Image (cartoon, rainbow, N blue to C red):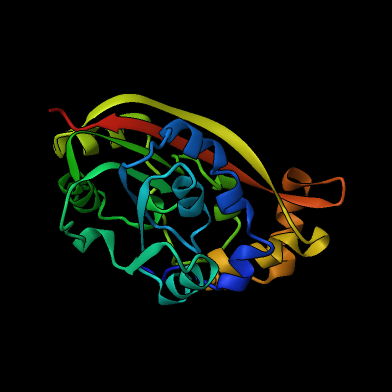
Length: 235
């Protein structure tokens, strides 16, 4: 597997806080209810798990990064977080809902992850997720020399993944989300330090190539394209 991103909790909560801040309306789409058991896949430092828990739901956040789980436990000591790779996750009890924001595009074994998610859901349970879609960061990726390759599917491709694992797709859409990167002139460099730390091309060349398309009003913008899906497990 290609080298993954360099998960630094301080950077994630600082200059890259947009990752979880954009997930707030995804929590609204989930519409968590008091008493529900909800699994947050790829919980990061726990901010969206905490928002879900405000509804009165019982939340378990899982992440494969020890540093992110440690920060989540420090941020929200009353919530439950577990170091786990979703591909190998087995739920002791089924969940009423599974939630995931900006995590599943880091897992190329999409069927394996979807099988584990489906297995964790109770009959009638729902899945609400957002991830990178086909064409996500296409301009940035074309300008780099990196061995990190995300899984950015189309609607049809990912719907088929979920259907193969017994889930019914209720809604799926792709939309562009140009995302401002914090740090002004350093914004793209800081983004690369987290998400493409292995880039071998001189950063000056990358910035020169991308500036006409992705730099405006003193700030860099990532050419994000997102896939949002709502699915359910039939009863």
